[in-house]
Image 1 (cartoon, rainbow, N blue to C red):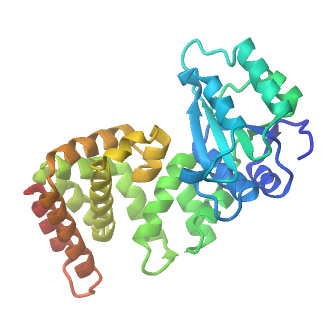
Image 2: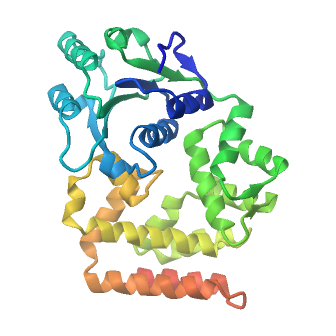
Image 3: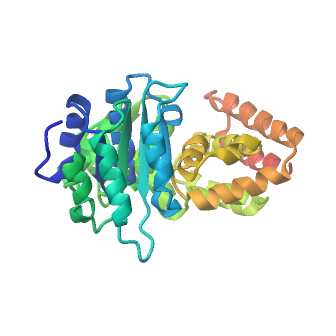
Length: 346
């Protein structure tokens, strides 16, 4: 990859660059939009490792607030017995008083970059909205590449949203209407895109009515409100949330998905091995993209309360309802109302 003289770069240009150019031994990426960096990690992974790239297997994650740069550099320098190549991801956590790498850390990282292990890439993710290139000047001199992703304009944001609908059909009017609610927020867009894809999974086409009901779910209630009410055995609250949304449009399929996802996460949290995952890996494993701390805390509490029999019964209830929801003759609202009561009474 050629030396970058311009730090600010458009997301799509950087995405193409990372997928086609030779990669530097150390890449520093700045963006306040975490999903964009996650997407670029996948691009780097496929370019450097191959199409079989797997985040859990090929990425080793560290955080600057652990203050353990020696462990990061050791991971960079060492080969693995199990995989040929890997990405060492260092996430910059800027707590009050953080001023970047110390002089010793700068020297250590710079020395490594000059004689880097070709089987590993050091990727530094900086999410700060006050990004300063000067903090990484020594690393850049040693051979690191630095990129700060430009904020999307409206056209770029709309194109990114369309790309993330993948196999779903969405017209220009629908796309523009959808984007008008999102304030150019990639985090919010990702959540709303997933809702729409689930809601429209049977027909793969998104209409204005679909957008109105799914955006309405976010504006009137959060997913957390609904899940929290069910898991805390507040049947009245859960039914009120469900009925309020259902008055606008069919919410049954999506609510069944929410409950299924919640109990799958609860089931995973009963596995002792889950404690070995760092926060990012846990978020990915549990598929919690928003309200992570609140939902994770709620799921852990529920995991400690449910025995294996009750958990099995919960999955039986949900699976039975999901099958019946596929029938056009079923009363979907009644099915979900009964499911809520069954889960509350576990």
